[in-house]
Every structure is written in C-alpha cells, then in structure tokens.
Length: 303
Ligand SMILES: C[S@@+](CC[C@H](N)C(=O)[O-])C[C@H]1O[C@@H](n2cnc3c(N)ncnc32)[C@H](O)[C@@H]1O
Image (tube, rainbow, N blue to C red; front, side):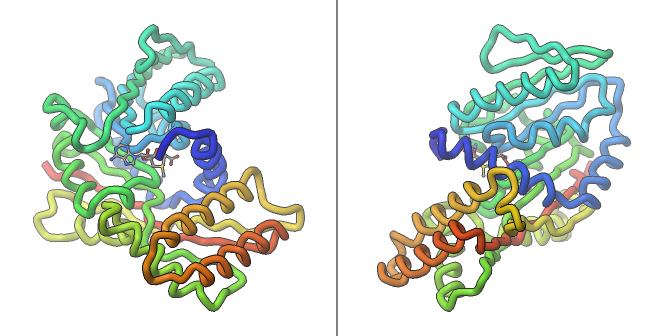
C-alpha cells in the first residue's frame, strides 16, 4: 500500500468504523491479563502493520496503568509512518504529555509520572525484524493486519517476538465474509472471487480471523486463548447520510473489490461494470450498507 493521500484518508476514515467494532469482551480479557504483568519495569509493546497510527490511541488506552511503556510500531510504508508520528504527537497533546525526539523515528512522551518511548520502524515484517527482537516484547498487537500476510505468520511471529507469558492481541482480523445490501444477484460469485484473490499470489489469508483461533487452540500451539469474539465492520447510512468520512471509506472498499476483480479470469468485464456501477450509484444515493466479518483474539504465550 503506497502512502498516497487516498490511502491515508482511507485509513483515517476507517477509524470511526473500527472504534465501534472492536470486541469489548476480548478487550477486557486483554486488560485483565495486562494487569498481571509487572508494572515496575517498562512494558514492551510491538505493533505490526501500524499504518498511520489509527489504533495508537486504542493501544495507549490499554496500557494506561503502566508508568513506563516502550512502544515499537512496525510498518512497511514510510509515508504512513510520518502520519503515525503526527498521530502520536497529537495524542500526547491531548493527554497533556510533552513529546520530544530529534530522531524522526523516535518520540518520548512524558508527564504526570509517565514515560512512553515510541519507536517507528519502517520495515516489512517478518523479514526486516532483527535477531535482537527475539523474545523482547510483553505485548504484541495488530489491527486489520493478519489477513494481509501468509497463514501461520501471526503465531510464528508471536512465538518469536514475545517473551514467555507475553500477550498476543489481534483486533479486526478479516474472517472471510463481505456483505453488501441491498442484495445483488452477482454478490455471491463476485465476492467469492474477491476473497479468493486475497490469498494465493497476494500472500494474504481471507480466513485469517478463524484460522488464528484454530491455530491457538491446537494442542502444543504454545499459546493459551484468553478470549475471542466477533468484531464485524458495519456501515449503514443514517437519515443524515453516512457518519463521519464513512462514505469515502465505502467508496475505497468498492475500489479494492474492483481492483481485484479486474484481473480475475472468472469475472466478465460487463458483469463487473454492472455490479460496481450499481454499488457506486447506491452509495451516491445513500442506499448502500456494508458488513465485513472480523474476529478479535487475545492469547497468552505459554511459559
Ligand atoms: C489495513 S492497514 C491497517 C493499518 C492500521 N493497523 C489501522 O488499523 O489503521 C495494514 C497496514 O499494514 C501494512 N503492512 C502490510 N503488510 C506488511 C508487512 N509485511 N510488514 C509491515 N507492514 C505491512 C500496510 O502498509 C498497511 O499500512
């Protein structure tokens, strides 16, 4: 994903959808598990696929009880990391913390007896991670990420990066179903092709949400499940139209579907034109609803 203005606006537009979708029971299980970790040393957190920092505020709310936090955000797109830095500085201002850092990739937030060290690392995971990262985190988080990488990556990385007893928390992982309303007779076939396109050469996993849960539950996985639950995205127009920037969010989602199907050998051009044209008109008229099946999961690394 290049850090074009469109991508940045999309990531920001999805923020209001994300905020109402995160599963509160899974969040609570994570908060309770965090409360059992020692607070007399820095809590070491790593985020994978941090984008423009859309979830940073949320992660900070989880770790609020810790006076010292070392937070590392990993993201392959340097342009998005610039936006991430702005997001960190902006939240620091809201929380009344000072934000300092000469190095573009580091920020130190301080105030009220708390110190939060933020490190932004531009790299492709897992390839860019270093030997020194092994076992060096207490909490590994990711939002809207594990469906973008090959099946198996999440737990392999969790095993490698987390210290024994460390926590794994994944939010909004796609779990294989997209629904639009009103129904269209091509939905089932076209959306099936769309999901298939996420795997294969693309290297992602359209069933990552469910698969992750299955992998954690496998005997000998090295992880114990703490909680799991649905976190579906739902966008529905109101009498005043779409909330916040969610019309743009939906427009971008339609663009993702179109882009994938343009190269599909199973979808004819006239079919795609009919389906996408109908969906765009419905969106313009404030008549389009959308839902994506997603899963949240909190687990603890054994040991
Ligand atoms: C759907 S976005 C989600 C961003 C952010 N977590 C949020 O919810 O706002 C996924 C992000 O993961 C990044 N990404 C995808 N594959 C990656 C990889 N292998 N290593 C690092 N970043 C990656 C993309 O550049 C993108 O910014």
